[in-house]
Image 1 (cartoon, chains in turn yellow, purple):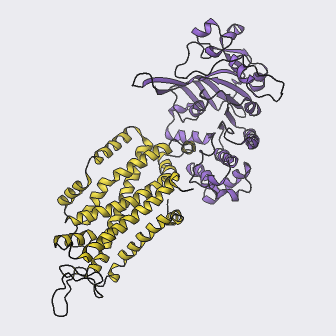
Image 2: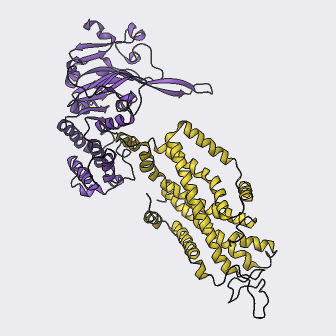
Image 3: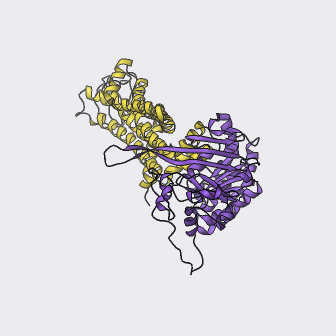
Length: 286
Length: 336
């Protein structure tokens, strides 16, 4: 199967993809070492020397990105918030693509009734509007990252499964698949040894783009107040900023999470773009 | 083929037919469903050490026949018998055992090797599937030996390569190696050299012939090129629109042919003599669409010797000389 080494080799000759990967990796490093990087406890209210709460203070040496209305350190919240973003992005992307690729492989390879049933299921899922569904699901099951990831996975697998299926449809008629059949290879061997590696670059496109859209969804849901109440995330920072009516007063509170979300989402799309060029040689520059 | 009756056949095809459902667009909006008889009542018998050549123009069902014989397609009718059992009724285990016996070389070496497999993976895969060789090292040794045998020396330099790092001829050699690594008893070569440069065709062909003779294989070689068939095969079957119209030992067929289509086909073989004038008198028009086959003998609209009966009745196969069968009304009386 595809290793990190192979992915790196794929990206090496692609500047855009490399930039995406660098942005993504720096966020991962920040998320992993968030506890050590963050100067303060993100949820702790900061007091000044005379015991007053440091409300809406602009950036300073002590608080690089100022403080919130509740007197919490924005920079620390940003750093710790990256954990949720990276976690939600990576977990939901991997789950979505795992499910989507498998359904696409099986539906495309076996065809017939199985394919029909699976693709009608995809049609139904395509009919569900994403955000309202996620809102209702989280409202019923309760706010929290687990449920947000569940909502993302339940909806987003449709995209990758349909595209992977169409790729499989053309691959399964290639001569080398026939040759594998003649060697006595079983269906599963053909699917996972011969076809799957050939759709891998396409799956990687979906890993990166799904990661981006999952982060967006998590931020949107948190912004709407459906995030985990005990954890800091970028969407929640925006939500707090909005509900304190500080949007136009405290730029240091609103802009950083916006930029962070944009950057991480962008990194996903940049990597996706690079994988797409690998998956579809027609896009490659000559 | 009465001359072969007493020997043991590897594979016997009895009256096999393959229909495909196709949609034909007509003037109306809805496409009409029609049946395409790709292979129509074919009988073949193959025994070890003998090569059968299958010639015919594009679309006459040569490849379909090959795929039927290997069990890649299920025949609509008829039986394919391998060592006493019908391969169309094989269970999974039997099919796996049959796969070990019958192998195929495909037309396009650029398509028949998985682009993400190294050459060693290509060759070792069949060994893994059929559990040949006790460990990886042993399997690698078998792969090396077969590579050297097909002329890719030294084998070590090729094992780690990907197909796209090799030339068409080298790839076709790998494909031959893959087909032979399981020690099959039947080998079908579907236009083995038509996608290759003319300069390397001879090498591949002589390799193929050597392998067939050395390993005493039963072989079927499909081609539209009669000179190639003459070089490689002992028997030749001429196909036209899903039917075998003439079958005979190759040299006999070239000396004396009875079907007007064979006549026309041989006429089309290039002749190095510059003064030789090709007479295009032996055939008219183009092959009809196999979806709407003409009534009677399917060759009659193009036949220069067409008679009234050809338009109405389908001809029956007659043995015109020993081992020489023809499907033509012209020769009906000579037999009886």
